[in-house]
Length: 538
Image (tube, rainbow, N blue to C red; front, side, top):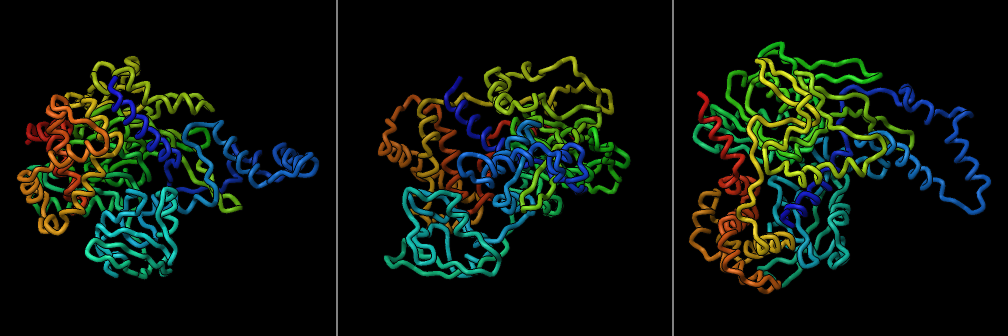
């Protein structure tokens, strides 16, 4: 197997599993102490062995023990004995975790990257606090509150802790800007920064609108409706909804979005568990896209709410699902607050598609290590490359509304399979991507030619200009300085891929996601397959 593929799967798998541990929130809340699974653990009864044990350790153990730390570790260990998606959230982490699903957080409004031990501002959020005081893309943050903030110990987490904070509080930044040798001083008043769920909505053809959704947060449905309205105004009559790498979020947002596509009285999803009465979500027939052709894109990192959406579209024969088998996360979590400000997200039910398929892939309670290897096992089994390997359990057959066969066993099987394309992969390409040289070069290139690049207001104009430049040759020379020897045979094989990536990231540094995805997806096989499928539909 290709080294780059293995590393890519490991990296993204780690990221998605970290995100999936947060679980899905449901609108219905319940009191923790009424939950029969936890009543014995968190009761203050004198018969509680956990309380007895902690008391004995605190009172009688030979050495002094930090009881708070011991309790935190115990909480984590207890929950990991259940299932892969129940999770204990310490009080210190709860706010940041909730921010991702609330649709906003308080900060200064910049996107940054750490390069050469310095915080580089990649983009400034329009209308945000930083834009209002004059920060611009390309600025380097060198001091925070008059204290130097550079060096090898700087991490993304440390930067966010410094820059985020309660709304209306102030932070003073020292800025190094190319146009001057002076360190510029800016005092920024933090404010609410939106966390967008819709990365991009654009016309991929004169009749087809494309919407990429990165998660399901509290504002996702509203963002989705706004995207639909914008695309309709531009002539969209068919839609591609992209959930690749979308690890899920709030179930109600997915249900509301699917409802836009279904006629009345269609089952969208149902959930049930031992102490969780079956809950059915049905369409109300008031959707604005009921007769509009639609394609849904998924891959091995599409999970949870993404799978609810794709499963409802597939089982109701409402559209076509294209890509690769999804992750297989179909456990329902509810969040319960604990007395010290921490929380537990506890699995209380399972999700099922309209045909009765359980979305959740198999797991053994308490065996998180084996569960976390699932995607790697699928990769090694060849599932990302051959269609035949996708049916993990041919005995679990279900029927859609019109009688088509679909398969269970975990995740959503696509109607049209699109394998990973490795035709352009070479050792040269692996090196420049694995070591981040491609991304680092595009930032430096953007910085060097920023004034010229800023004159291009669309990705088409940006690409037209870059096609006339010697970007590839400049990159090859840059890679040499990093120890990557020039290999003409391998470069020629990977040439189109490298050029596409270089242009897309340079465009993103100036135009944001609106300049990135349309350029990047010109060569995306899954998107191209979706366009073909929709062109076949009236």
